[in-house]
Image (cartoon, rainbow, N blue to C red; front, side, top):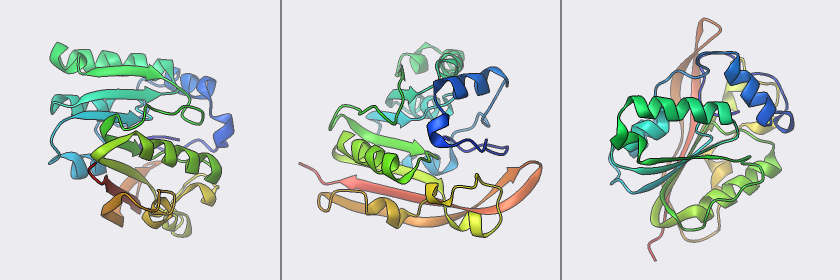
Length: 222
């Protein structure tokens, strides 16, 4: 599961949602996601000075393109080669200056670790895994943030399940900002934003009031 969608999510278990699952999902639809950058990324990163960014679970590339248009040099990582090819095509449509700022990389995020202290912004939008692989992923993403840089994680809040929003029936895969903070090292971080942010989302033609768990933390300067 990655990136906010305008339709319902598949109810497959995370361990079943490998490269074949995602490649097939992208092949069967002209567009899986909305084509717009995730709204919480826009809200949290619009005023950050451009630097090096890691877009985790980059999908069809809307977030990466948005960052590159603002001067960021982006490493975009996704499990699906189909999604990466589609994203690269979208970036080229925005011009060489944008496309040249993005490096596309295929990887299964449950077993991949980015280089340490390499990015000024690490963004993971709507990545939902079982608790153990999610804890490993958050640890790896935190390690990838350079001193003075930011880690931004956004996901579906557990309250959505209680409020009958049609989410996959795995409540342990959703999290609060506080849950994410607990996965970070005990020292070396400052919480910039940690909240359940009200939002609306259209699922199967119906608009639901939802909450996004939004955590942005800054790694202490060296």
